[in-house]
Length: 262
Image (cartoon, rainbow, N blue to C red; front, side, top):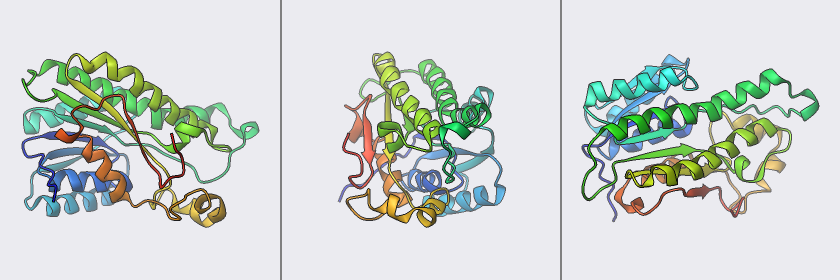
């Protein structure tokens, strides 16, 4: 049996109140990491995520929640600073925050406001956290035998193949993938690993309206015949934070039940 041990590691994560983010916070805490996660509005959901993470860690005080708009660079800087102030350092940064709208939006009705909001929530937020994390990691001493730190960004199959009627979402997530592929070689010589997880359909609050609205479109496209579970995506994110991924940078880890073979 393989045991993931992140004892002594400090992680920050955006969008940790529900879905994939909440599952990732729990797994990080269970593995021994100290974690600070952000949420935007739902204080009750953040409290539930925090309680579940405390239970997974087996002790209170190892996880903290911070209300912030992840798309704002100042909020990302505040998140990193909070983690360093509370736990002494930074090792892992996971940009998970994002939005998606189940309603079809053809290009003729995709106005500039909707376009900018989608890119801000999904692409600007990834940039903001990556930049803040890289700046902090570059200030920290580099270990002799381990990476200086890890940055993991969450994209989507929509960024790999595009998504009709959701072109703004596909463009944002495609931007995340391109950002990873550029940032990874830039930071590699400094010992900072940058990778990406691209989930397909996942059984979360955000995706369930699409399951009800277009079940044939969703499930027919997945060879395994079902959506993923948040924990299945979270386990891949956490893997990229372990020594097992020490020789991976610039990778896009596809976790989609066979829907996109990229």
